[in-house]
Image 1 (cartoon, rainbow, N blue to C red):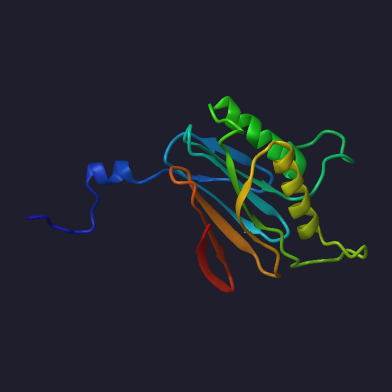
Image 2 (cartoon, helix red, strand yellow; image 1 turned 90 degrees about the vertical axis):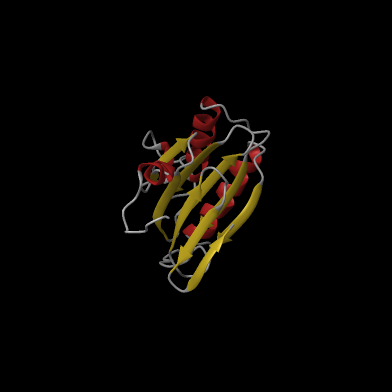
Length: 173
């Protein structure tokens, strides 16, 4: 007879996937069945890439569209260089762009102060798509735009991206 007393057995504790937090302007890659998480996605975009063939997964939290006008700095801060850095790190871990798939979330217009008509969120989304296309990585799921923040959780073993937002139910991409 099994007794459920609220404590975890050693095997149950070992089966719980590690939670890996990805901060703003950071990326992380794993080959383990971990949960890669990031929050605070307003105009920022979370790009989750999974290679089901090699079982490599990665997540980057980008803030701005392009590093072109910035000298040096953190590559993960920008959509173009952040996506490139994530793909290169995943390739170093054994992934291939031939079998990678991307899912993206964020890019809202929460605080749009632009006078040019194009918000940071929509410019981020356009640059993310453009950069993924340059590397031949298809976008197979997305939750973009609107006027609300999001947080995401990438299940590294399945490639599922769970998106939570303040005004809608969680959805799995």
